[in-house]
Image (tube, rainbow, N blue to C red; front, side, top):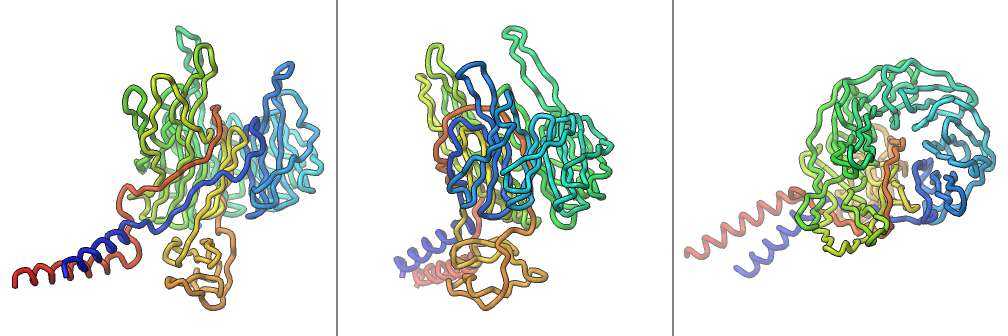
Length: 497
């Protein structure tokens, strides 16, 4: 009896401590080791567009634009030729594709649009740097940029009209629930100069989130966040509950990510004090490692949230007079209880010896787009493209409002009122398929926008593993608790006889 009870106790505990969800960011492909990807747009699960730049050091140093497209879910990319690609010091800053043919690209102080998947591009000037673009249809769109720049177009981006802005912050993020309700985020900056080295460090100040309820014609600002930089913004369909992934600069190279939340549509924000610890660095002393930047943000409801980003580890040198190389790792954080606890990447202890041996780097993450709780993209330096992969075996391994297909995908249930009448290709809790129904393979909301961060380093596989900062009880876990308790009680009584 004791052996049988002990065995059952082990099985029960194992089930209780099994996360109800597991997934990883996997490197999908490289678009070229010398490409710094700063913009990404995925209008469908198969079609992904990216933009970035390369350094040409063969003669007079120049920066050349790159635009690439994939039609196979990121497995391969092809270059989209553009006349501006050979312009010296060409620096793209924003990209948005409405569908597989129609897209817009910001380069320096110009905007370009295409209606044939990038076969040809037409230029329109806005006389300001644009960092985020969003179109509701082929005609109506909005843009946000430096010095509080806010613009809207009614003719497909051919011409743009400025909106009165309540801020001078450099706006780099936008999120839209529909053609009327949207948010934009950004921050100002101050520069400090080291008196000895004369090196300049830029610090974020006056982070802010703007809100519009008339499609971008007018905007109102939240309170400022002090010395916090802007990351992605996400709101639920009620337009009141939302999150903002900000970041705080620690020193010249290191940031710490923060997760803010709002209950009033973005008028006020509070820091959730989310635990961003993802490991530790052993380099002469032990230093805690935390997520540095969040670039992908999605919430299915007030309880189920998913964050993706990067963590700066350290900077190593190749030796006397050698170049330095920052080490970055891709990180992932998931909550099923509104942020009380997080299942997240565990980098463990990363050791760097006195010789400066360099562990592999995933590269800094510059941009991201979440298209659902279980689907998203991130991209960054060294041509790295990261795709979120999640596999479900049972319906209870997907979050609220999602269905587990027998293909192993968790997809949004698009039936009226989220009434889950599972289709034939949906897996039930016992692994069998369900009855007829309809499922939309995309999420119900899409967050977009891009932010550029500095950094350099070689690329490698993520090697992400997930751990939980608190036990995540699997479905029916409490039933096992009760059963084990009953068996232990019975076992004690048998010993007393």
